Length: 124
Length: 124
Image (cartoon, rainbow over all chains, first blue to last red; front, side, top):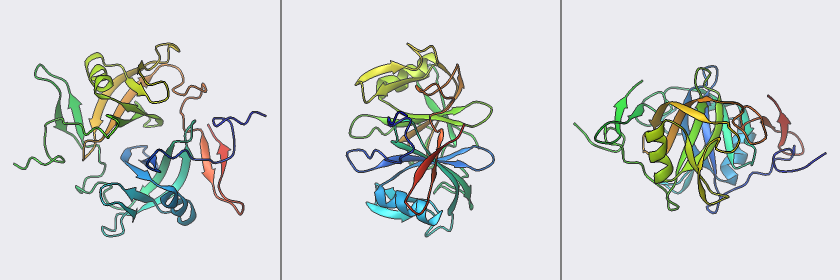
């Protein structure tokens, strides 16, 4: 049996120079991409242990349980890792909006190309 | 009208210290998360201009048209940006498998917690 990073059953997340992996939270049932955030080793372990999404806030420089202040928590239905183990997928039951702007998803603007360059169009 | 990064119609992507934004490619129609990769300004512009996904390969240190060698290209149906403009969503029609391991998605292993710590279980 090969034991490359792609084919192993060992979970050995590859943290970047800042000690982080990227995590995409996807809505359970619909597959809608809700948000992309980062986890350090502690956030990742807490997410695995508690079944709730924890992240590392790069702007605040602190560990962050999603929804700790807003109540907009994420219950983790399933976690996956990608081929080279430097990205995490969280399939979640989202309570309330995922985005701090009170929108369901952080991805609420479409990029549209035009003669004057790209601009953003608000969508749901 | 407010013109914060969250509410503006101006596209002003926030590149990190390495000059990259993270991009999640999602399968058109199903919402299945296919892969997470990175774009520099040139990859982002080429993606917008050509309607095909271009990335920056951090491991090879080069601009990379997805599928250039494998034929497994991504036709971009829609592009979105997130609230703080440091992450991109690509909704794509994927030709062939998205993953270099020949799997449909790079996220083919579930993380499962157990008494001996987390391990990976292969799923589709």
